[in-house]
Amino acid sequence: MALYSIGDTHLSLGSDKPMDVFGGGWEGYVEKLSEGFAQVEPEDMVVLCGDISWGMSLEQAAPDFAFLDALPGKKLLLKGNHDYWWTTAAKMKRFFDERGFTTLDILHNNCHLYGETALCGTRGWFYEEEQDGHNEKVFNRELIRLEASLKAAGEREKLCFLHYPPRYQGYRCDEIIALLERYGVKACYYGHLHGGSHRLAVEGRQGSVEYHLVSADYLRFRPQRIWED
Image (cartoon, rainbow, N blue to C red):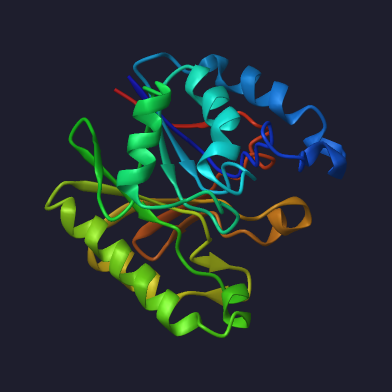
C-alpha cells in the first residue's frame, strides 16, 4: 500500500474551461493524468490538494468525479480556491454514494488514517485572499478547521495537506506554520502554484516541517509517492 499526493487537476469534463488552452505542459493534461495514475494500485491512497474541478456545482463536476473515480486508488479530496462545487461534507458524501463514486472521500474538519499515520488538512490561506474584504473571518475559519483536523489525529504521526502554500518566497503564513509545528507535523504538501511561480515555491525542511509542492503541472501530472508500506 502506497500514499501519493497531487494537486490542481483542474478537470473540466462537465464544463467549458479546459486547461489545454494554456498550452505547454497543460496540453493533453487529462490523458497525462490517466498515464500518471497508472503507477497507483487499487489499495493505494492519493490525496488531491484542491482545485480539483472547474464545475460550478456537484452536478456539473460529476463527469470529473467519474473520471477520478475510475482511476486506480482511493482518493481523498480537499478544497481549493477554485472548487466552487464544494458544499457540506454530508451533501458531498451523499452525492458520491448516489452516483456510485466509491473511491472518493473528503478531507474537511477531520483526519483520515493511512496505517498509523494521520492525514490532516484544509484549504489554507494565501496573501491573495486579503483582497476579498472578508479575509479575517475566512482566515480564522481556516485556522479552526486546520486545528480541528490536527486535534483529531491525537498523538499519531501527522502529515498535512493544504491547497495554498503556507510558505512562499517572500511570504509566510505564521499562524498556519505555528499550528504545523505545535502539533508536530512531519511534512506538509501543497498546491496552487503554477508555471513561473514554481520557482518561488519553498521545498524541503524549514524549521521542524518538510514542505513539498505537488501541483499537477509541477509533477508533470504524475502523483508524487510519499511513502510505501
